[in-house]
Image (cartoon, rainbow, N blue to C red):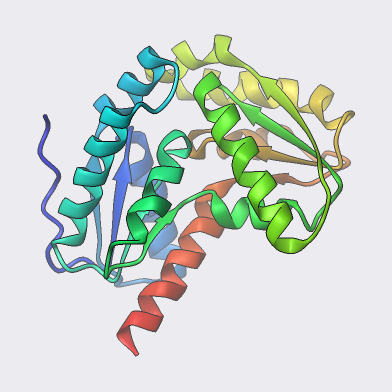
Length: 228
């Protein structure tokens, strides 16, 4: 099992399933909290295992718990899981952790349920759709609102991401957002990797929400609270 990257001294520690996310969150850190110390652990094997199994098995959940606990042992003020497929595991782990453990997409879902009744979930990995639908339903229940959820799976573009052809990946998603937007009041990009596609899609008639910024902002709030 790949070891987690050492996180001692970090304010926020991230668990990623792709190294691509490191730059995304470092840029957000530089913009929103210059000088903040971030650390990153990359566990591609966790998502690969979930994709192979068709979802998160007890063994994958246990490995994810272990990875999150290893990050928390470094003493950060918050730990963030940036993989939507594994997000629920992070919130489960938070129950027994002294360090806040967050899923990157919870704030996005909370915002979505207050932005429109018809919510469209866009994903490029099938395992993310079910996890994100459950997340939106939870956020809707917490907010006391009823949502009509539809799903849009663009799994044929995932190989471009895996091959590192990121522009092709973003562009292919962006082109399809126009059609998906006709069937929803708000779209959410279920995976953090999809965020740049929103800008490429141009101005749509409805909001297109992604998780990195809102998730980082919530983690930052926890980090600041822990410092007070």
